[in-house]
Image 1 (cartoon, rainbow, N blue to C red):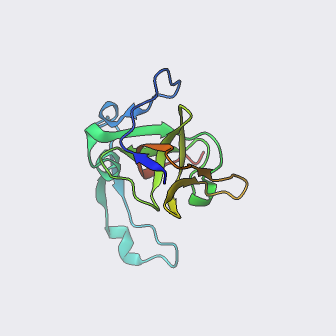
Image 2 (image 1 turned 90 degrees about the vertical axis):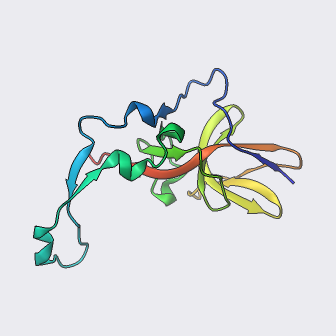
Length: 155
């Protein structure tokens, strides 16, 4: 059986350093106005609804435990997480099978879906061009945190 350790520290000497949420909380552009966006026929009543949305409050539940990572690569494209996205990672959430997690494999960060297969933890990509990462008996899977949100610029 493989072993899951959580929360894992940032690997020493890692060129990737997560951005603590405390550094972007309460920024000058944090408050925005949102409207419901209908994917079908628009509702005339929608013109009269507007709620303030603080993106920090929406994406970050626990500031001290939350980090941002830049995504590199396409292994999670089936989960709509692609190169250039920013993922919001909460270290206070205990990782469970089915969660998308940021893990440390061979001293490097990776983002994959956590699975438990025949009593062993595995990290599965969401793209058929990539292979799962499997852990053998006694091997340790280090999970840095659980992905709770994704941010993407369209242009």
